[in-house]
Image (tube, rainbow, N blue to C red; front, side):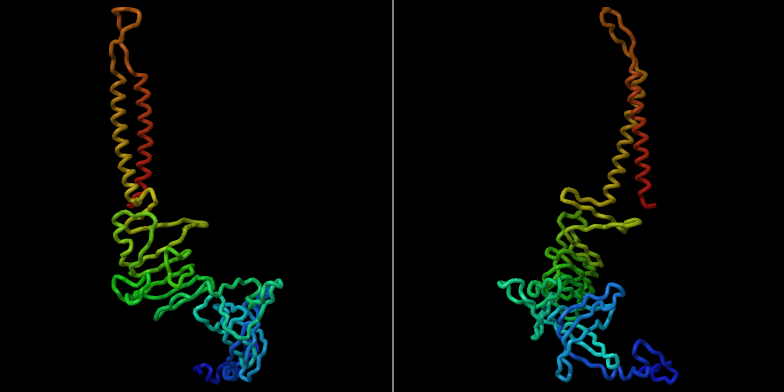
Length: 357
């Protein structure tokens, strides 16, 4: 006991049914037993009582089978058991309430872990359909189609019933995994969140995944080539990276900005184009500079030609000519080029505003 519970000054408080004088009795009289899930209770939609509660047949230490309402022991983190799964239960020595702590595993199965001999059956809907183990009101059971991840020494894993998982592990060159090797060849941490169904995470077969690496060398099957400087290190990057991989990736902002900030460049690659942001904007800036110079030359030529004159033969009057000029034609060209110069200047100003100062 702690120094506080040993103290005579500890206040006589009451929490629910259990007073401070009953604490020692509550701890010492706790009963542990195994149970079989019979049904999952829907809970109360009004005050949310009973969320996570189940009905289970529990075999007590008196070798007596009783049907009890069992609550999750930890309301902040629990897995809802399914009918016909075996669970571990504890009973509060004072209140008599039962709580479940976890589900008993069964040979690597993860979707529906039927591990009990005391099976609850569901009658077939027709004479041709055989009775089958009850799986709940709406849960679809695929016990042999979805299996657990392959686990390695030291792994910390959270797994759902449908193939989704979170693996907290480290690289190890002695184990054949997609993240075995790192630049330091030590147990560098890696975290993988994925939706998939194979026992090992895989970019090509998982529906989607997020990989948080530290220095692992990971083969990333990108569908479009990267610029050469990035392609060389794509699968041999020696520092931490976040890899998102799926059929489609959507970034959405509800009320404010989407910010991408890079110490070097941002590469954008498709099946038809490969480039980075710096190269595109530098090329555009250079192109505008050339257009500006060309416009200045055309403007100068138009201004010169506006004042040029030359003799023109008058049709129908032999031997007589007149002086002509190109003021109207080249004046129109001069005006168009002047307008173009203004637009180019505005584009240059806009692009210059994008440059880091």
